[in-house]
Length: 474
Picture 1 (cartoon, helix red, strand yellow):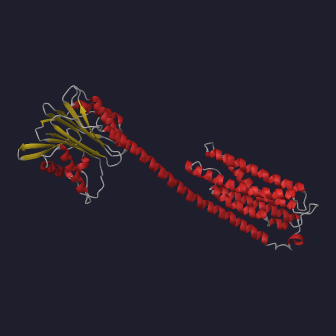
Picture 2 (picture 1 turned 90 degrees about the horizontal axis):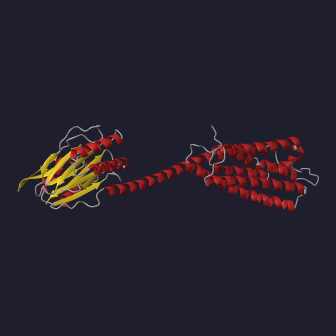
């Protein structure tokens, strides 16, 4: 029910906050003890009717308490620097010792406030003196432990110590002869009740303070975690942007334009342009990993690496997809898959081959005549990568790109972007835009698609990554 030590379930931030509060409490107590040292030292030099030995004993006892508190404060400071925290029994013992300080202080006064023979002239007055006030100060400082159980333990120890001293005085001295002229006997139980109320108040306040501290620490931890995640996402975003081509290929007779915007700081889309060494061939890729965020971003990096490592002069599009699928099937979790389209372009013959694994539709702008243009929607020929251990047989779609014609590789983030009414932008809108602006350059077509999608979406939030690659023969 009561935990008199540091809770192992507490976060490190909360424990450090409690340790700093403990240092503040020890500092305040040391100041009080320093004041008592000064007072005790004065009475050692100027004793009042009692023997100097008793005054010296009181001073030594206060110094002992002060030394103990310094050692405890040193242990707490070491814990703040990384050393192990004090054991529960040590924390409990420290609370009990501090709780007994008022009682010991009262006992010293009972011995020192007398005549030259050592007889106490009015011990009942001592019970209501500075020792009792010191007990209330200790109760107030116990709140800084940020541990209601320790506050309660310290308060109960103080009550028991004070009650024991009171019992001793009433049993060994005649109240009617000494105490009655000074104060009515009911004052003592009333002070006991007030002291008990003080203990209960310290306990309740400590519990309430702990709740607020826990909330504040949790909010601060959450804020720091968010800031750390944002920094990590920023780094991941920069790395992912670095994976995109720094410069689009310069292919004689062709215009190339590309755009990639993740829905979050990192995404699951990417595009690439790979020149096949020793040939006039260029392979354009576009891929989309399920989801968006850091996880898909890592998968896109793997997919890009697998495709790039496979491309060479003698490798076909089918072999590239099969090898990438085999690697991704082994590497990524079953709940993820990758859609990927490959477009191989021979700049000398203007022959193109398109093979898509779940990515689609890809769009081809075709001129039927100088005044007639249409757009073909090319659907995927094979399932997405990493779904099946082996891809089923599929053949690329082959065609020749005529002057003024374009091939557009596009992720579904364009087609599926919704407006505020929940309506999809759709494939047909894209096709109509490409028909209307077929005579425009690749950069112009890309800009028209971007502005049209943004105008359609309005205030709606981008829900998926958007990637567009336009390859147009001039």
